[in-house]
Image (cartoon, rainbow, N blue to C red; front, side, top):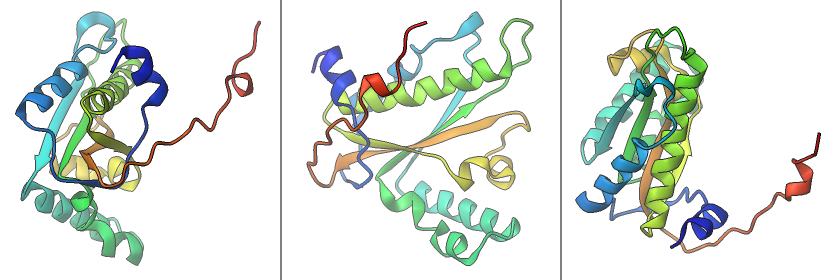
Length: 182
């Protein structure tokens, strides 16, 4: 797949099954994450790869968080099952570093770019992925259980695997809706 085809056909595939990325594919995905824009070359990222039984441990973290933070019954009842929606999850974290020329927002954006780069690397290798956020990306309890610092930010959970169905999605947005000239 060439770069233009990748950029114009990339999609999220929320229904993912085994197999997860193999070691060779994962190595490429990891390298893609480290090639994103990084003002000051400070590498403000951390990535946690979650597979196998670790998905159950992540579900337990979600569950404890939902209970401790008094979420509604729906969030609590689904918490343990959420990490089981894909055979691999990469938790992407912006590891904030005080820097005179690189504000926190740029560090968070860099980590976000890493998520997109990893998803594109997976897609280019015939895999599927979906970038998820939501309550568990914002939870202070989840951050604490992952040993993150107060100013660190979970920018997303990248769910990876093989698309369960081959469903090519057409572009729903038109450039003229979003681009204007000055």
